[in-house]
Length: 116
Ligand code: HEC
Image (cartoon, rainbow, N blue to C red):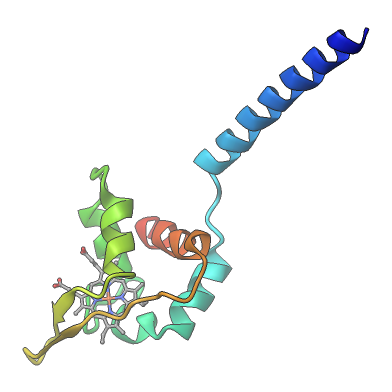
């Protein structure tokens, strides 16, 4: 009897694990949290959702990376590793980076950008 119930709980555990993974796989974007983060890090000063400012609009970024399987990684690096970017007046500076946030929140912003 004891064995059977531990097998049962093992099976249940495996099922629960699968359920968790599939929830992660198509986790919905929390748009409010993404916009709040973008605003607090002044991303929106240089990027409109659909309007080009100093940098490309997020809609155009989403379009460029539409079929790129590395999109998430590229955008994640763009906003965590400060690559050099060229502004409209021609001067170069290090891109704004977010380093003081949990990865899930940064990934949520990445997913939001790619969904524009
Ligand atoms: C001072 C202006 C400025 C700020 C602030 C800024 N960016 Fe940018 N960003 C740029 C410019 C300019 C580019 C274009 C870089 C290039 O094409 O070389 C860019 C490019 C990007 C790209 C496109 C990368 C690619 O590979 O196509 C993304 C995504 C992005 N920024 C997101 C963000 C996020 C998120 C924030 C806030 C954490 C942010 N940016 C803050 C100016 C800015």
